[in-house]
Length: 364
Image (tube, rainbow, N blue to C red; front, side, top):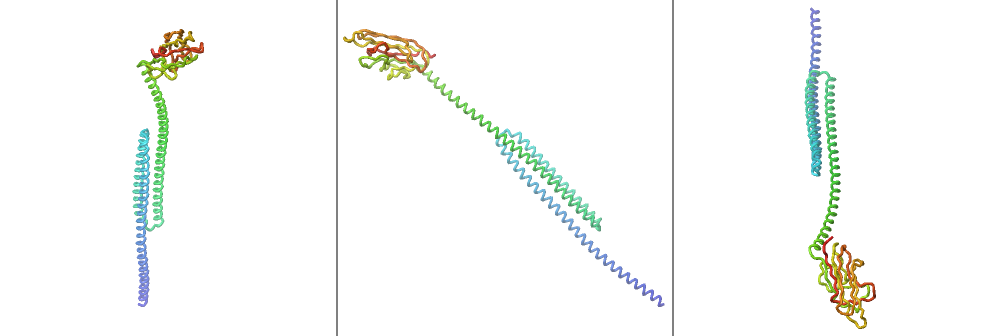
């Protein structure tokens, strides 16, 4: 009986120890359950944080990229509009630039779509990661590997975004270079056009001057050919008792002087226009003088110093005269006049019937 009691006590003691051991194990299980709950919360927090970081980073990068592209687009459009206002020759290039701009927009759209797809893929990877985290709750190394994979995916997304941004900037730089080249070409064409215009203006001015000169000559010729051109004068004022040799007679009474080409102060007719003229002159010898019964009047028609005709009269009467005429081709600017001869020292010339006339027959 004692042995049975002792065995019973021993059995109860062992049972108590087992119960105590079981209680300790249950306590350990409860503690482990609490740790699992905490770990699950940490995982949830990590998951939430990863989502927030991924969403924030992608959103921020996308916003910066879009804003940069919009600014670059606005700047490019402003430059293109200025270039279009400079010259119409850039229309073709601007159309090409617009096409390139559309290509850039398309590539940006493709890039945004790619980013969106990558973001969706990242979301799927995160969802898959959540499932893997539930399945591999006790495998810490697997969890960190998945986190590293997520970070690598984010890094790849950043790299692709940077490459797309660099490509877009390179395309915009190419567009800007083409715009600069087009502006230089336009400036070169403008300088060539201005030089040509200046040459044309100079030639136009020269032509206008020739036209004005021609108009003056034509007007002068019309005045000469449209009306009678000539003169008729006589000697009115008595000079001293005689004229010396080679003295131009200044016919001082003017009957007719078209154009004013005869000068009574010099006695010279200046030919206004080249052509054929008729010239007539008459001379009267001085009055009778008992002391000089052989008075002589000898006059010569000159053209620029060359003798063309001569009239000589001698006698003692007061009514003795002599005359002559000549039809000559003379040139504009030549001088025609009547002068005493050079054969003797004195010539006695009386006014009234001493005269000189000339007329244009036709222009040549």
